[in-house]
Each structure stands twice: as C-alpha cells, then as structure tokens.
Image (cartoon, rainbow, N blue to C red; front, side):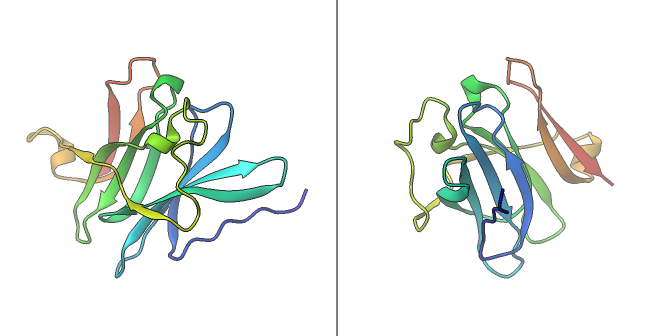
Length: 157
C-alpha cells in the first residue's frame, strides 16, 4: 500500500478521527497559524482509490489547538475545539458541523476548494472558582456514554 498524504496551507497542530461514523473513514485537521487565518479541514479516506480528499474546509476564528469529535453515532456532527485567541487565553467551544452527520450521504459536501465560515459555536466557560478559570486549557474530551451532555477539559497552570 502506498503512502497517503493530505496537504494544508498552514502548519497543522491537531488531527482527530471522526469516531462516530463507522461507515466512512473521516478525519478533522486543524491549523495553527499565528499571523494568518486558520482552517478546519474535514477529510475522507477512500479505500477504493487510496486517497484523502477534502469534504469541507471551514475558517476558524483562532488557532486550533485540539479537536474531539463526538464518539456516539447519534451525535457525530458535534465537535469540541480548543482554540487560542492569539494571546495566553485558550478556550473550548462546541459546534455542530453538519457534514459530520452520520446520516449525511454526502449532501452537505462542500468540495476541496470551497471554504465556509465555521457553523455557530458555543464557548464553554469554566466556573469562576475552578482551576480551569486560571490555567491554560489544552484538551477537551467527550464522555463516551450515550448521554453526550458532559465533556471534560484538561488544563495546565
């Protein structure tokens, strides 16, 4: 089997598998560009052609430091993203990316050259007295249970 590559315009800091979709091999790539805009690439591997192709490309407001796709098929379109606002502040956000939906048979596919704004995100805020409010958020993880109302963040001080 030959090596498979996918190229992005900026340095990529993170790569995550879309675990909630057992029928397709999809991945999410987030870029980390300090001086220019950043992107979130949804790519799909084709076993027939041995190629990775962009399904969608989204502009992100800040540097992407970590990605976590929801592991349950019924919520596969939900994505946790840890972003850096360009300074010392890291924060987690939750977004719904329709192209990641397991029930989507390609209808939301945007194509390799099309770039869209990231769907509306909800910033996850730590409670005021928590360590997270004073540290640097590095990772966001899903609770792997069917109830996806809980997520965990990991910080360093």
